[in-house]
Structures are given as structure tokens and as C-alpha cells.
Length: 178
Image (cartoon, rainbow, N blue to C red; front, side):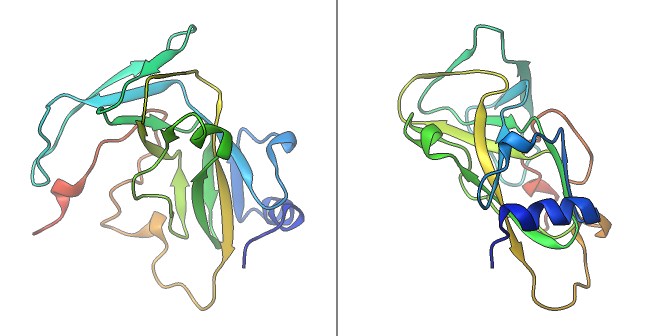
């Protein structure tokens, strides 16, 4: 079941959901709007290798915005830091963003219970489009969990994305054994 606006507010009061900064105007009927953070990144190498640590170049979005180009994967980050301690958070794009031809995630829309961080976005576009720091970029939807949780994400020894950051984080696939 998806939490409504009143349920989201109640969970914020209880401390099981945290959004920093929080703006009541960003609370929708059953979601919370998040915004594009100050930084983007691109991979240094043209060919990525799943077994290798693929390094990124991080750069600040200028005041006049930045033009995203097709055939380039950009890593972005949400302005908002979130903690979700009792629900499953899903990050979805906003329809107005999608209508500009911007996809904000390729596969990583679901967070785990216990995820505490900013969200790295996997941004791709269908045609050139100018984006800006602070623009609405997505919405968080919270789902109720059924059953006891044994391993919260923020307490797992092998969690790869637990370090709090304001910049995008590259793939840590290389840390897996395969």
C-alpha cells in the first residue's frame, strides 16, 4: 500500500521518514517531490567494465544550466537527503520531466528499508535538454512493509552506498564477486 500525504507527514513526525530539506509545498497526494542537486558526473572511460572501478568526473551545474546530450549517461544527485526506516521508498520521475525526454533512472528506482542518503540519478535524454540545479526532478513514493526486517540497509556490512554524499556515486558493481 502506498502512503498518502497525511501518512507521510505522520511518519515524518514519528521519525521513520526524514527528508532534508523538507518543504511542505513539495508534498503531493501520495508522494514527495525531490530536486536536482548541484552536481552531475560522467564516466571518464567511453567503455565501462562491470568488473572494474569505473571512475567519474564530477562537475557543478552552472547557474545558466547545463545541456544534457543523448548517448551520454549522466549521474545526478538529489538535493534532498532522505532516511526511510520503516517503508520501501521508490523514486520515480515526474511527468513534466519525462515530457522533456529526461529519464532519471535506468533500473535503480527502489530503495531498501534503512536507506539513508541522497539518491544518485542515472540520467539519460532523448534529445538535448537544458537542466538546472534545484529543478524538480522526481518524486518519492513510500510503500508499507509486511513482516519483520532482519537486515536494514544502513546496518548491512556489505552495503555499497551508505556513505553520505552530496555528489553522485559511480557504480560499485566491481565490489561484487562474479
